[in-house]
Image (tube, rainbow, N blue to C red; front, top):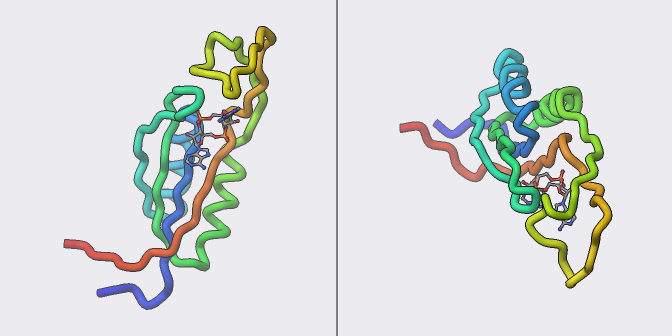
Amino acid sequence: MYPTVPQKLIVMIVADIDGERLLHKLVTQGYPATKISSTGGFLRRGNATILSVVEENDVEPVLATVRAECHARTEYLPVQALPFIGNGTFLTDPVEVRVGGAIVFVLPVERFEKT
Ligand code: 2BA
């Protein structure tokens, strides 16, 4: 049966080192979650994508957990570590990139089926 309360799909892309801890926190708080191993397109580092479908009232509590568990920081990477630098720019100095933290998308769920 389709749930009566609107559901939201929360897509969380987090650093590999935070993924397992975030997954465990969400599940112990009673939120269903699925972790998929993924790779960032820019840095080509492993990251984790966590999917969770929750009632819309639960979106903010889930986001609060994400904020508590995933902290962004800055790293300086040698240009050789990057796959490309756009616009033909010639760089020799290390490049500042944001790592860690979370990228989150919240989408409406149109339909839910369990077979
Ligand atoms: P990556 O694509 O590997 O990007 C890692 C970090 O590198 C990004 O952190 C950003 O700080 C930097 N970065 C990305 N593209 C850049 C560019 N063209 N020039 C300079 N710096 C760049 P976040 O923004 O926190 O993103 C972390 C990861 O989240 C990304 O890993 C990607 O896997 C995912 N992501 C971010 N935005 C996304 C989006 N709009 N759609 C899908 N996935 C996204």
